Figure 1 (tube, one colour):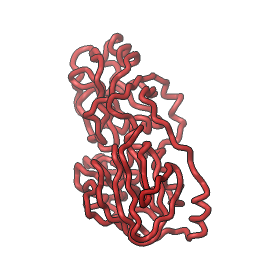
Figure 2 (spheres, helix red, strand yellow):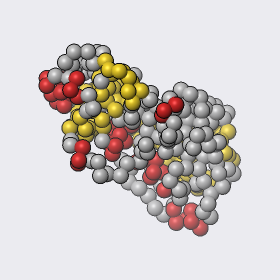
Figure 3 (cartoon, helix red, strand yellow):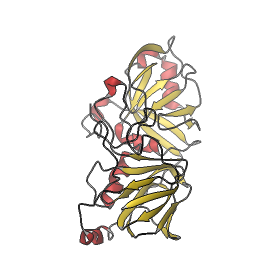
Length: 305
């Protein structure tokens, strides 16, 4: 099956679970921002974990189908139609040659994930099909999608009888509130901040900035007081690291984060809560709750070292 992009939306790219093992060379993991939605949408069409999907931000794409297949979408409340007929999040739909799927603006949440039975078939680069737009590698020609792009979908491993079973299942749509509580583990450089600074961090509702992107979630709000300078000798960054900038404001590093950074890291987001941040809209308010590392270290993570 082929997918011809008519209108890509502001930012639609090919992503999978990520590219691991190359941070020492300056290549970050990339991959989807909302891992929960990604796993759900692949299961809806019978794909194995790790198949490539489309990640659409704020507004989804419009595309025409070449051939026959099965697709689903999940994540942000982003209205979609098939030849003008409204579709529901969390269900699999058959598509036929010449049909058009169109997505609108997200009503809540930010990112939706579109999966096709068989998965998006683009070359594997360093073990992943994810698009790293900063390095220009992976995905479709190393960039976000544009009008007239044509994507191939791999041959599904399951037949039409399995599709009939899949179409009978659905997953309830998620709500994405504008007030978001995020669990964090303090450190590794929380000693760079005064007690007042730590109290500010843990008791302020920070507003998500319009400057947020796949690299990081930026915030507006009360400045966090440091003991002195918050600059450090650059060290490693991970998905969920919370740096405090020279202005005293937090920035949470996300899927396209740099591999090292020179700002002190006050805390790290609990892995399970990163999906909430992936769907945080500009203007939403985020509060931070400190939890002990023992409370979360036994949880299974979808990241690899």
